[in-house]
Image (cartoon, rainbow, N blue to C red):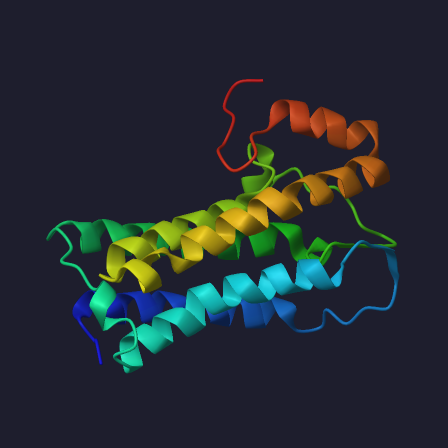
Length: 195
C-alpha cells in the first residue's frame, strides 16, 4: 500500500474531479439529440481514460501489483504535480460551467446546441482535453510509479488523437463557417493569444 503525501494529494484531486463530473453529468439524459456520433469505440476510449485516471492508481495505491515499477521522485516534483492538479481540476470545472447544457460525455449535439466561444473557450477550443493533459502530468508527478504515473498520459493522448478529429468534423458539419471561423482564432489545447 502506498499512501505517501503525493499519492494522497493525487486522490484528493481525483475526488474533486469526480465530484465536478458527477455534478454536471446529472440531468444529461436528454432525448432531443440531433447529432449522435458516439460509437462503441468512442465509449471505450472514455472508459480507458477513466480507468487510467482512477483504477490503475487505485491498484497502485492499494496493492503491490506495480511495486517493481516504483521510482523516487525529485523532491520538488510533487509540488509541481499539486499545482498542475489544482489548475487541471479548475480548468475542467470551468469548461463545464462555460459549456452549460451544451456539454456531453460522448460526441453528441442537441437540437438547440450553440457554439460556445466565451469564457475559457474564447482562446482554446478544447479546454477539457487540456484539463485532462494537465491532470495526467500531475498524475506522473504525484505517483512515483512508471505504470500508475504514466497511465493517464498514454490514455489521454490516445483519446485526443482519435476523438478530436471526429469532434471537430462534427462541429464543422453542424456549425459550418461559424466553427471554421472559431477554429481560426483559437488554439486546440493551448490558448491562442493572437488572431
